[in-house]
Length: 147
Image (tube, rainbow, N blue to C red; front, side, top):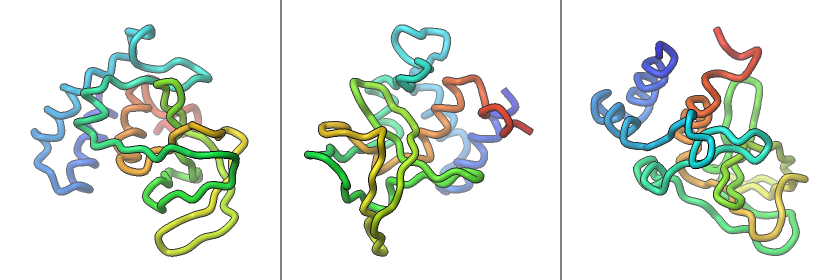
């Protein structure tokens, strides 16, 4: 619970929103780690969010066409600790994945990943909220990252 409150406060500062509004938004997201069949962590598949959570958190995606490499906006990249990832959406499951950059411009990246294929979607807006949801679904920070 302490980690959750810290994340809410951090997100409130980052997005210049009053903490109560952000907390209310998070409580309405319907992300339930104890309801594995509907939402929460699903191991290697990733985790699910309700349609309401996706809407509340402003998560938008870009559908990939054909084989890679693919062009994605720089807003799709999640920077956390020592890791740099993308979030993939496949069959309703979000999953944080590794990628390589083949070319970079100020607004876009040309990326390749063994974890992406034709018709997958890459999250291009809301990756910070998605990371928070992932931490909530998995019960906290990944091993080795908890303080």
